[in-house]
Image 1 (cartoon, rainbow, N blue to C red):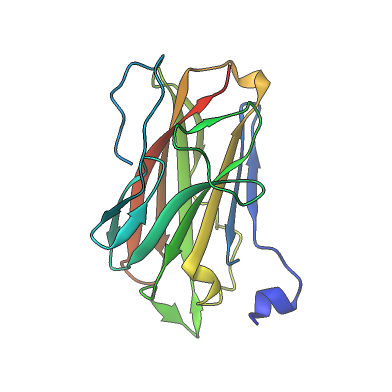
Image 2 (image 1 turned 90 degrees about the vertical axis):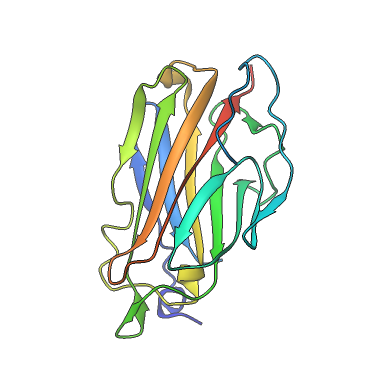
Length: 186
């Protein structure tokens, strides 16, 4: 059991804005060019040994991502159309193998998310969601990263939202970048 779990700490970083809520935690598709009035179609695909769902598009350098998917708060997978209820939290779940460089037996990661509306307006730009994690992460916990977002009714509803994410190694050169799109049920 990791030191973090022994201490009963749940690693999460939150940024609450009037339009979105973000969280990131450890442990435990390509861009769609369709008419936004239609439903997104997604399948589970494998690209270079990585299982991708929900039209998630990603590039990994120096680390192997085994799976990238979108989850609901209860842990179930977001439907293939990426349509969620207003204020419903969704999590980008990234599952990795080894690859983070360790210092004193710990991984030191950064994570960022940027959400834009269909018109390109940036509603959130979280530059380092792990900035307060100064003691590092247990290597096993660092293999499961989850970045959460939800859209509140105060944000003014867009037909869809683009999420751009990056997770990087602050000690080494490994990094994961990518994006996905989700829609609000009307």
